[in-house]
Length: 205
Image 1 (tube, rainbow, N blue to C red):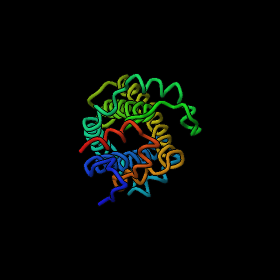
Image 2 (image 1 turned 90 degrees about the vertical axis):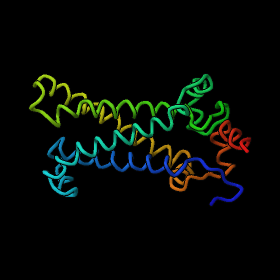
Image 3 (image 1 turned 60 degrees about the horizontal axis):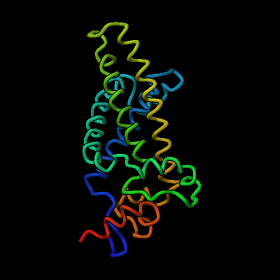
Image 4 (image 1 turned 30 degrees about the vertical axis):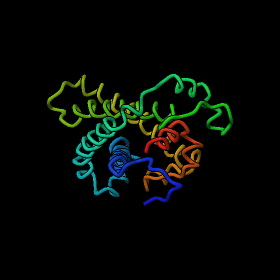
């Protein structure tokens, strides 16, 4: 239980879904690198060997997509961009430098919303492009070659998004990791980083 100076930012269900996506994606990155280039094949031994990752990589990929879809359904309303979000994007550099003049954020700021949309799209592309690679005999060679290209590009974009997400959540906005671990943030944190959301929560009886 949190004290009176804290408010709930994430429910238990939201946190479980988030960490399911995160853990699955980390496994997919490591196993995908092992399958992608011989220089990274040593990762296969860490993850149980080549045959194991060839079997589990697509299965975990489907699990991640299902978890990502559940996250999308839970947060789709909170992730809609509004006029204040568009203003926020024009002042994003000030936000990174902790300067004044940044429009107030709701539960999620515009950067988080764009990252969410990008990662959701990459998850869909990874799933669709992964199917011909999972069942190669059922698809033409030309489709498989295009699938490899799409899969690699989507993976690179998603990895970049993951790095940005970790950096912003640990180095730029201190307290974000605690929120996703415990579900709670201080009222001061909420007012500083998501003031519109903080006011909405505090008005709720």
